[in-house]
Image (cartoon, rainbow, N blue to C red; front, side, top):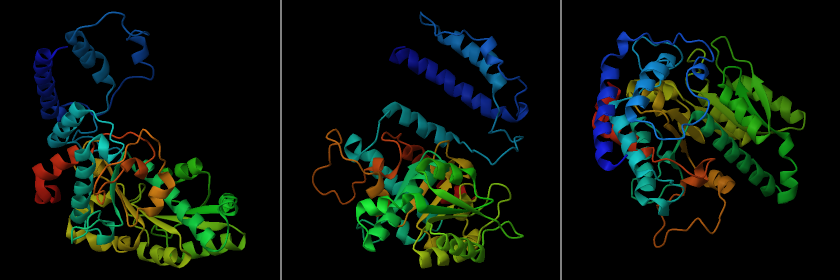
Length: 381
């Protein structure tokens, strides 16, 4: 495919996408195929010779489309939404055009710096405390900042690792050597409610820590009192609390945990306090809902999915930390093939040190398109 054919086929694809969205509500939202249907109708090996675009398009319509669940349909009410928008799609197209692997500033300065900027935009749009901003009001670099993760599950793992790093540093400050502190890792315990998303348990499984699932109250909320009791029992058993997750909008019932109470306990116990707002966090673009989220200003990290309820195509999970030190210290690894930026590096963020993978897509571009083409008023609407 040369550039001329790409122009022609690209226009056909854009027309097909527009037609799909215009007629989406007339399509049954759920697929009716049976498991294994596709294995029976496509070859079991890749083609040896090139196939035509027309043949591929035909197979898309007759073989792939019947097996699709149409999440963007107005008739689709399963799970929480995963919104898309035309500005988001266009931004994603440009991201595919550049096709960068943006593991540090040198890889593509604009990709890094735009992410810092739009995450500050988004943080201000949802009313986050200034501690979470990458750039202070006076133009100097902040201690915190935002980073775009693939999913809230990835964000959960990253901040649990940061919390573990903070706990290890606390043990060393109490007089333990690095090796002695590391030998205590098997005693680390993280706290979740029985309503916390499964991502919490998966993150704990991955980093290898203990978990304490705490029963919620009659409103299905994690409370200060329940958290205090759980921590006291675990400390008496010789365990080391290091992390707690409060939820703003649980998956089962959209309940809101006692975030101020959780923050009070976390501060007292010096443990990492993460707020998971994967679904409901987008509501905070409307100031009238912010009183419901009292307490997030005291958290160590906050996360919500712009790809759930804020018109930005999957994947775009926004994570902020109030202080990036522990996150970067835990995930930073230097190699010769990671060339550093030269000159003033005050605002140079190597986002590879803020996430699990090394490489990363230019996700900030679609978020930038959405925020500019809708504006704050359009997003609130």
